[in-house]
Length: 604
Ligand SMILES: Nc1ncnc2c1ncn2[C@@H]1O[C@H](COP(=O)(O)OP(=O)(O)O[C@H]2O[C@H](CO)[C@@H](O)[C@H](O)[C@H]2O)[C@@H](O)[C@H]1O
Image (tube, rainbow, N blue to C red; front, top):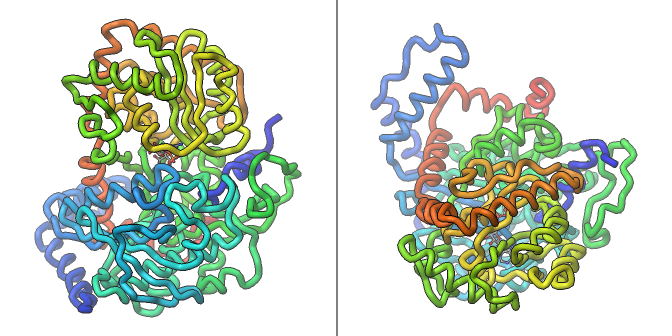
């Protein structure tokens, strides 16, 4: 039986992840000069007032594009994130914050990431600089790598809890359950991102663009507008918020005085308020293994970090254009933030790139026979034999081999896949690699009982992920929703053909019959027989193609694409540059920032 959308959506949200010399003065001057220089280079359309509103927007956008195309001035960009690969990673968020900054640095920008220090990272030196934020003293560690300043915020809030970089444990001891002090932990991270710009000798000063990522750093735009700028600091700074997954919103019980304790000014509190139909917050006491709570239609007062971040951000970005549209389409796909999203004019969607230094079959340290576009057929054959031997499947080049890599959660369609495997494994081999909900970990470990052609590995293993991307013939991505998805990009880079659900970024990145197979959209909530059948049918279609020349053509098509950050980083650069420009849209935005709540009410 279906439950009301508000409650339905919130079951998904509660799953963790859940939840020296400074250049300050110079930077301030530079920002003003920059605007002056740019406006003198171009003559803005003078007859804007006579145009209709959409036409005005189009002209204004065109004008912005021209400016960006020739401006080329370096920006100071600070990514703030709960994870940053390779130092910390539970999934795609870590990958993006690990690799996008490198590409932006290559394009001439000063780029920094600020993330927690969960472990004693070998290459990161102790700056011995400290700041006091949200009542906690933090200390900064630093490593400069591939042109990016990596700052790690050291505090017992992070280090004492996690001890290890791989972690499904960055957000809580169990998958889907937050540490009780996660609000404190991430309030500290956000405030440290500001203070380190001032306190570190190599800090970027106040003239920066912050890029906050997901709910964990959604406090950054809030603090910028209501704390720092209200005090006359960071006056030229801007804050973008990038949402990698709208299902993780940081919903917590509303407690008297809690936000104030975290350093949130009173005027911002309203933006956090959220009425939730779901009567639970998953925590250390109530881990989210099963949906064990009945929904009655009653609503509960909570705070919602992501909502506040969206309302205060100068620009909201997500990781594919299709997902940007989906999020705004209704409460189901917007996970009840659709009205908020529409109230700020929607999100900009930029498809993710992938890191070619980590995902490159010609330099992959986990492959005995590295390969490239010209040697992909031989290379994949060798990788397939190695993978089959590694996981104990029959070494058979003629058996189509399907792989899966990812979190074991409903988002990823794991329940649909587990049902489908019963039939897929009649004619093909399947290997599933993942961690997540215990019931799914147990199920994948028992796959060998389902069929001798299927095997599941319930751990987080980079070597095996590389071997699957290279050795599988097809990669399964049956997600119910997928903001962008990196695994299909990795797979294609290795000449592995993805079989994907038609949702989010999977629609933007996989072309039916050319670079992959589209299954159609899965039901967002329930496990439906027709979805299982659609997945089985598409895999059968893929198996039929496997023994034909078309498969080799698809492999070549996949591997020959440039899936790196090169193009997406240019788009990011363009979007960030427009944030620095005075524009009609940004002045509208300021009004909504001043009164976030009204913006939602009036436009929703
Ligand atoms: N058991 C395991 N062992 C080894 N490696 C494993 C693993 N489980 C997962 N991984 C790795 O984690 C990453 C997963 O990235 P995805 O983008 O596919 O999904 P995720 O949902 O985490 O990211 C969210 O953020 C990203 C980034 O924006 C969006 O692309 C995506 O749609 C959104 O859901 C891949 O690098 C994958 O190889």
